[in-house]
Image 1 (cartoon, chains in turn red, yellow, purple):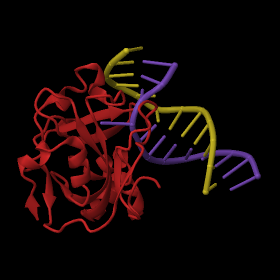
Image 2: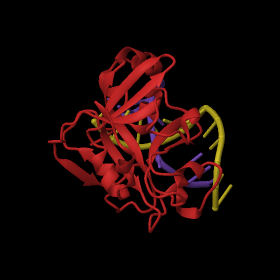
Image 3: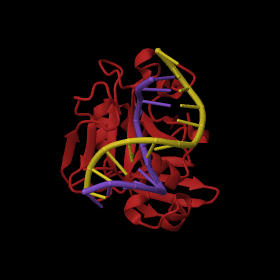
Length: 192
DNA sequence: TGGCAGATTTTA
DNA sequence: AAAATCTGCCAA
């Protein structure tokens, strides 16, 4: 497995959202290593997308979204859960890809311990769940995703499966945009 | 299986 | 008050 080059994150945001499907997210935490295959993503754009956190300018929370492509944007949602995003657009432009679901690959015992369940389909199917399973939290906000702790990798294989484009989940504005992408039929996506 | 309340921070 | 969520509880 090879680390994704920085150039990968400089593509258009929707292209990154599609391209991340099938890629591997790896975290070397003090507790151990976890990794999963990305099976579901969502794109959040700076133009004509009021659901994007950056749509109304920079705040303390979303500042990382305006960082260079390949940065992590981790935020707290509903006061309880964290969501992990990959920043895509050039420095100063607020766009990102939300990682919504992983197929667990490595460190399943650690994931189960963190999640409090050993049901594989419940370990990382959902943005809050995958952060919990992977041990991703506020300390990763603004992290460089081509570093040594939290990074994206590729096993070199092209994704053979179909990619479905659908409406995004959990938003109440810009609901019609087909900016959610997932691998058709994959059992680890957050919902059908 | 499906709907809903609750947990709790950030923002408007 | 609503939000890029998840869990447990309830009813059928």
